Length: 614
Ligand SMILES: Nc1ncnc2c1ncn2[C@@H]1O[C@H](COP(=O)(O)OP(=O)(O)OP(=O)(O)O)[C@@H](O)[C@H]1O
Image (cartoon, rainbow, N blue to C red; front, side, top):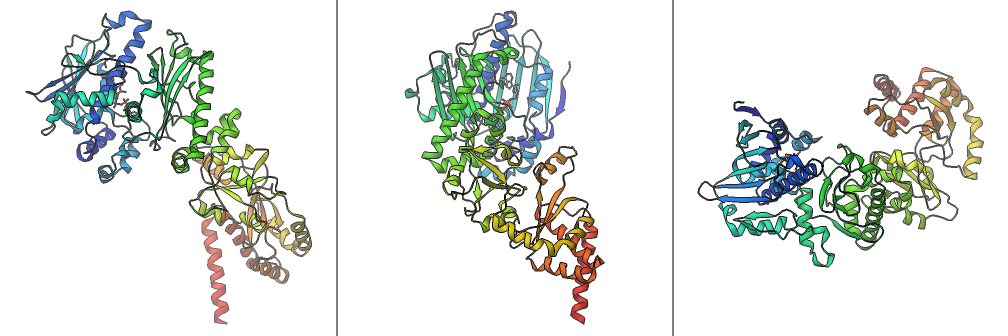
């Protein structure tokens, strides 16, 4: 097949533009990325050859070779890994198949990357980092038992692909270095970088016929021999991150169940934490042989932000990826890992709250998913959560334990209100009765709260949403309500007739500053849940709300008087609908007919004008 020229997909061009024009610091990480890709390719080939030795074509001296050619100013990274076919190379090096890529790159301005290169670290530039130091990159690759292919690009809009010859299976990545990047052709510089970035890599990395790395898989070494820097380099290599991790967990389990794991909590939320498929990010090895990086059984999805490796020495090497889910030992490893992670987080929270706060700001919303996924650890997860509340200053947080500590002895439940922002929640009419009784209300502003919190119980106390018809009236409130109900019976009847969308209209004794509010009955979905369902293209079941009127509010009182003198006049009906629409707005909802809402307001203003002119 002749040479064909193809355009990069837009997201690749955009990424290349950022890399070529603004990624000036951390240039040397290109070597880490390319060596890490080469190592992955070897791992994949070795795994395939386990079950099908013919595929290896007799070449099982796994290794990576780095060759510097000063005359031609090229640096070549070669591996005898799995290689790429013509289609694969176009797919792997011409597109970025990660969801949300385009949106992320669009948001990331070049200036931001110049000043904060770690932002791009949330994304992981991988192979494309080669263009930080090279004006042209050639990739020659041959998969087992297939022809070779040559890919070439100058890091602009396009690349070419053509057939070629290659004896050895695997991939050569040839960088034609930019002027000024000659340091990456120097032996001592390359050696130092390989030691720094990839010393732990199991496969030998050769430079000038000499193996440079010590090759001892990091997770097999004893903890006391490993310094923070080594852990951090290892993390950056597997996570493709620019920043150090927030926390490292190195576990060596011996006895009935043997495995080793090195887990990391990143310091920053990756760009696709919520839109990518929620799957675990751990690499599973069995006796040092890489098996898969897509093993959902290793960690539940609410811990999907954890990166790292697990090496299970007890599992059979010939277990296929598909069979992994049926291996009971994996379940045990998973329980063990979950326990370690939760324990580490608890310790961090107790000993270094500022650091824990950083963790929670990035990953708290994911951790919460565990309340619904992992019943056996529910209380441990709940203990880790942080919330703002009516008792904290904006930006400050409290915990469920602190809530319980500050709770009056006659309070039976933990109160919360979920919504889009603290600001909105603070002004919600539902807070008023609790405030009046000096009860703290937790503010929940993550979308997942609506789904998980209603079923949570913490240390025997149920979490109750204060916008639901579940908060009991006090005796005093009850008496005050009953004394006023008679006066309002007529107006309440008219509301009931006029407002189809509500299930019940009630005189309320709980509201203070607000004239009215909408309360959910026990079974209904919250407005936010309804919105989410609509966003997902589903029609939520119709939920009717309870409309509560504050009999002591001047607006409600004057509407009652007007109703007594005029009956169900147009003015009274306008007032009634406006009160209802006001309650909708306080819930973050819209009046169902905005035009009619506008007209009602106009009539009211007109009326004011008429009064003023009198
Ligand atoms: N040396 C290689 N041998 C075989 N395949 C390779 C090699 N280098 C890259 N690839 C393929 O190209 C793909 C893209 O590589 P790239 O480094 O851009 O991203 P990645 O490693 O998949 O993702 P990330 O960098 O976010 O982890 C890889 O997933 C792999 O399939």
